[in-house]
Image (tube, rainbow, N blue to C red; front, side, top):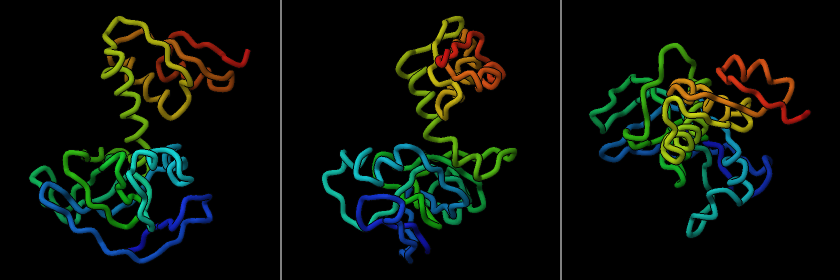
Length: 198
């Protein structure tokens, strides 16, 4: 399979497309043909030797970066999915998931079915940002209905999802954003908008 590989930490010029062995899923895993992979700030930081690479005991190059994926199951060793299922998720984080490749072997419990009404590109943009928003609102802050929450950077990747999740929960949402994004965050459900540029 083809994969975007790095042999050192650095700028975008360190990526090289190379042939790599197609992964073999273990029990409880599926092999996904990747149709789209997301790029997040953590991917960029990790590529330059920061980000989650600080948690790895050592780095053995070459490596394949990326975590957010969307694609189709082509082999299943897990009862949750069958061949042909469209899935998306963020497998193995903070360990390497090798998402910048044609195929990814992923634990089935770290994937979910892709909704039919969104594309693979849209689905691959969701996992990290949505999980960050969910964990901040519900796992950490324990947000409840009828509470008030302030969401900074409401037009950003995490922020725009956090607004929608907080509204879904029944919270009163205030958000900061720039003047040009006031209408956007208001349409998402922010009831109080603070223009941080004024």
